[in-house]
Image (tube, rainbow, N blue to C red; front, side):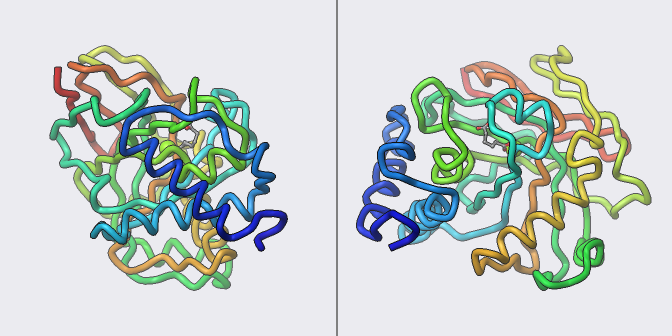
Length: 261
Ligand code: 0L1
Ligand code: MG
């Protein structure tokens, strides 16, 4: 048992979310009927990602979700959450993606960290910065497996926090200040969202602290060479066939992705 949820149910719920992603077909929300609390929802997430690993994917990092007020307001959930990234979710910077693989994809501009070592969950706050080798502009492709892109906190945790894909721009050394860099999201060369890295928990480095601590609570360790997506600096926008999206982060550069027509 995990809370009120039996282990076979954890596997069954993970299977439903896995199949929904495979078939690119939305399913009704699962958490209320199954009695999922956040702890049980993370167990479902783990079982869901385990299915990807079983078919040969590799864990390459973590993502933080709902780290900005704009994102919390957009989805009506007000807690920072985390999910897992695999190698199959990564797209080349400037590459392209076939959106028919997704249900209702959206994109959002982020900051990515590259880890130079595996941080210890009990390191003092702020020390995790010494575990960062480089930083980069990034894009996250999110795709809720739930109908209407609507969910509760345990629903979205179980669904691996809507993780679907990501792009990392050129890595560069971490600049002195990361806490107030301008961020733009362009679609087809037109600016559709503007924000600042300050929107990411006040400073994206706090998202890294949160990643290490929250994952540590579930016995998950971040590894050397992993990518940590710190969270979006703006609300997400729909990603449509033919769109060319670009995240522009002041002083860091750009990351882009094209959706096939
Ligand atoms: O990366 C994110 O902030 C997404 C978290 C889940 C909420 C959503 O799907 O927008
Ligand atoms: Mg995100």
